[in-house]
Length: 562
Image 1: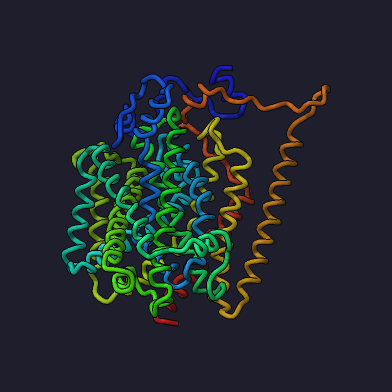
Image 2: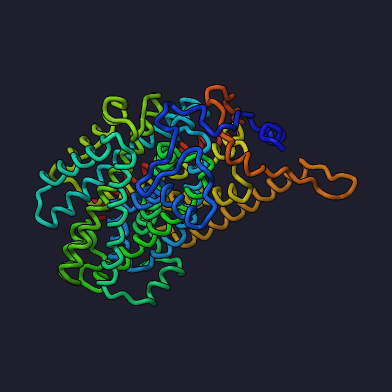
């Protein structure tokens, strides 16, 4: 079966799959050889056949998945994991274990979108769903990303402040470093800069060992869902913060655009999937190491339950574990702040380029991509300036922004699901049924968490444990009903032939999947939305507005000590 026959038989819009070039790319910067930090792959070279050549290919492709994951262990992440360890010991360690499949499922979908379409996440949403829904999704991204960048500079200020460096010196220098890293006009140089920060991320492991951890509490905390002191609005705020800092909306926009910028095509998609899985395991290992270090380092001291900000954690570790432990935590915080700021700001700059249809690539210098580099510099400068305002409650701001990311994640995941089921966009690369069910469960759990937070703010004395059980039961029933509906729809859409055997859908040949790319985006008809889908999206939007308001109220309560 040739590619045209397969596409037509499966209801996909037929493109021109060979040669393997994208028809929707903005300019030539996104076409050509892969020139990564650890190697080069020729665009039309032979496929690697030996184990050694496959390893070299993986090293060349590695980058987008690893960077997006480690970048998620940013300054806000370090502060959130430290707060969990200091205030709740290891009773929240299980949240990190559960987030591994969430990370892999979400980011694997954007890998396919980037490699197959050659179009950034922001532009796909606008072109497929219209300006209204584009403003809904991309507008949230810009606001949340800017607030996240502010938390990164809070991290820079606290980390270098631990070493006695004034924030009025530390923050501007960090801002200039971040801008200089992106203006070289070389993707490979930028990626090599980022790999230095990725390697430094492993400093969390010796930090954890310095706190003399015990295996028993680590195992118990990993497999036994619960929280020290019970579930309440304060602990729910932190749980949502852990979710928001580990699985953030900016990751979707960053990795999809970075996959395109690195020139990864469907031919190399399995290598990028491996890159993403490796990155997800590394990020959870680093997060767990930080939680363990602070739990064993401060959990049995007078500082237990007294988290204020990450700088105070560094000083506490220095006093109660060793000066080296304090130094390592401060270095980890600084490293996380820089790589986080670089990745989050770049996600916004990529999206600006998508929306404005202007060149947006790390292959371009200042002269060619002035909007791309200019928006990056402006965001960095403004965020740095806000951090220099005296008297701001830095710890509360940091945790609140991470929780905000967790609250807004469901809407981002819904748009991701819609795009990954759009046959005109992904052709033979659309989601399978089981993947849709898993992703739907993820959205349901995220909405449930924000609903619990809203309920606990409105009704402080509500039984959170009972509410959680009831909501999980409702979610399980809803998913079961959805599975039955999908199964019935599939059964009734097929007719059993006289021989009694169900016909099988044709499986796409490997050559089809490797070379199928989305046709020119502007030529695709926009998908029609049913009334039920519109009502569902409007309801989700309205609910999220309420959840954000409740989050702000709770953050203010925490900030003033109630």
